[in-house]
Image 1 (cartoon, rainbow, N blue to C red):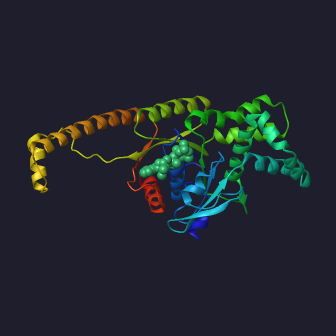
Image 2: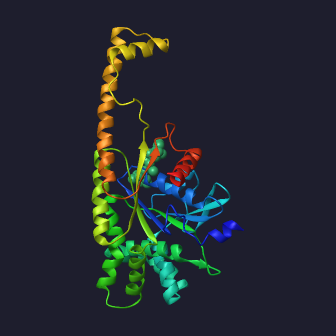
Image 3: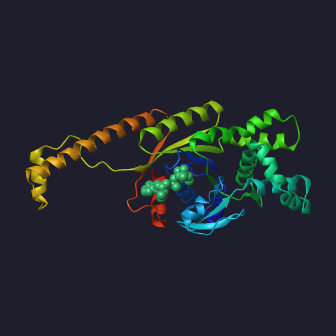
Amino acid sequence: MSGEASIGQVHPAWPARLHVVTGKGGTGKTTVAAALALALASGGRRTLLAEVEGRQGLAQLFEVPPLPYAERPIAAAAGGGEVRALAVDAEEALLEYLDLFYRLGAAGRALRKLGAIDFATTIAPGLRDVLLTGKVKESTTRTVDRRRAYHAVVLDAPPTGRIGRFLNVTAETARLAKMGPIKTQSEGVAALLRSPMTAVHVVTLLEEMPVQETVDAIGELTALGIPVGRVIVNGARPPLLAGAKPTRAELRRGLAAAGLPSDQATVATLQAEAKEYLTRRALEESLRAELTELGRPVVELPLLPGGVDRAGLATLAETLLTA
Ligand SMILES: Nc1ncnc2c1ncn2[C@@H]1O[C@H](COP(=O)(O)OP(=O)(O)OP(=O)(O)O)[C@@H](O)[C@H]1O
Ligand SMILES: [Mg+2]
């Protein structure tokens, strides 16, 4: 009962309906999007985890066959929640859209056979993104029996280098189109993406390039008027040393206490490693400070030593809820 009732309310720590997850390539966008969808589904809620790049990254992560253009349950969340997944496909979205407005039916299938859709999305590349974001909007705002179909929608989005264009294409289209359903549709998507219903979260590692891309993307999104949610530091390592470089005497005592050889060569090697580690940690600290300066909430997810399996995803989901 409480699950059903709460499906209308957004999570207080993650106050948006549509969570767009971006970040530099390989920083963990797909992993973090999946963990967030699990987190927001916990306690009997339902979330949709969507991808738009035709990569089937979600199917790989959850070890299921390629996802069709249909919302399918993909995982159970803690406390009876459900995550559904969808691979949004521009061609299918266009057919669905045409059918909605023009009731194409068999004519739509004929269009597909003719390759007309490929043609349309190839001559107008922006159209592809209009269709993809349009479908995401539809699932975010869909109601069933006057209730939201989903508590939240989490989008495994294009990387930082393309996120501004991807999310702004509907505003551009709305501006260019003089009238008609494309204009109305684009205005609707552009409005959703600029409203408090949306939050764009940026995933980063504590490394220079991803942090730079995070700074740039947040600047770009802010200039476009698109709400930025959290900065998510992925693969964070817990601090190993108290801070200062350990002395040779301390290392020797430590080695001896652990029953390990404490000869001069071992101590010297360990000391060099400690120095290198502390240098890297100093760099990480300065990158952390740079991220904090962005003025957005920062959440850290641990590096899972064994990689990300289902249990690992659950751990990350829990961290997202408690951080
Ligand atoms: N916290 C973590 N601990 C350990 N491994 C992780 C963690 N997060 C992600 N990974 C691993 O890092 C790799 C990249 O993650 P993922 O595929 O989520 O990144 P991505 O940003 O979606 O990449 P792409 O840009 O290719 O779409 C994967 O092998 C994933 O299992
Ligand atoms: Mg990915």
